[in-house]
Image (cartoon, rainbow, N blue to C red; front, side, top):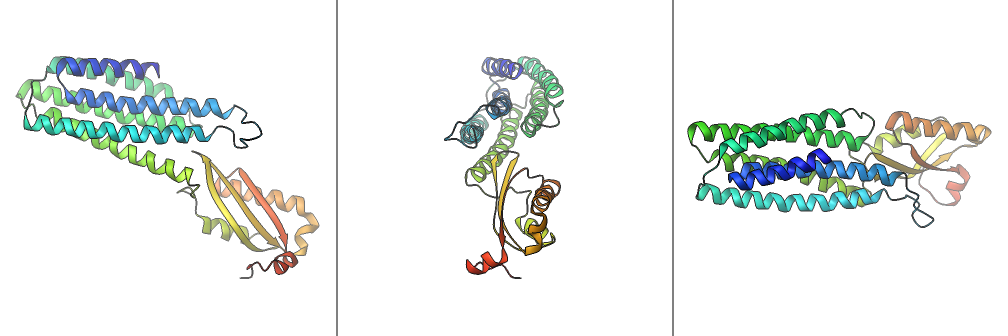
Length: 280
């Protein structure tokens, strides 16, 4: 976070001094890296904080609220980039390419170092996402350097707003992806990589399970799916109910990587009296 924050400020100063919109756009992209790292840090910090009696899920959703705000801010930044690029296409301005090359090269080196540090974590989903943010910013830094080299040797100043637009598209794509994921989690939608129909089929294949209903799959926060389900079972299930329940939970863990599960077991006679549609 320290490296990303410092180079972001350097790129802002360099962009203002050189007149390069591409360098300012790269600073905006660096801001997305900084935000991703900050959100990953917050997620890891809040994960160990007790939520108290009123917050049974703890503080995990703060990460999602912060991510949602970040996505909205990024969309606003993209609007600024596109507006300024349009103005530059209409009225080209001088760009001090030497400053751009130096600052963008520093940014590229910092991105390489940051990626080497963050990518060492293979367990945290948030840190893996942050590593991908940093890697994408390294590629945009290469684009900024290329635009500055083109301007330096050809005088084609349109390369600067052109690269700015490309960076803006990259930021916008990432912002909409973050926005969609955040809204899905807040609406408790089923995670994209999980198929409820497949879960239902898998649970119904367990011996002595005759029906599945009230199946819900959602995310508490990014990378933390949860599930609740009612299983209708025959009388043989209750002969070894503890082992059968553990087996059902292990099937969900092995097959769908869902740790947080709540399973309500109901007898067939209960289902009949409750008028539950369970028979295939």
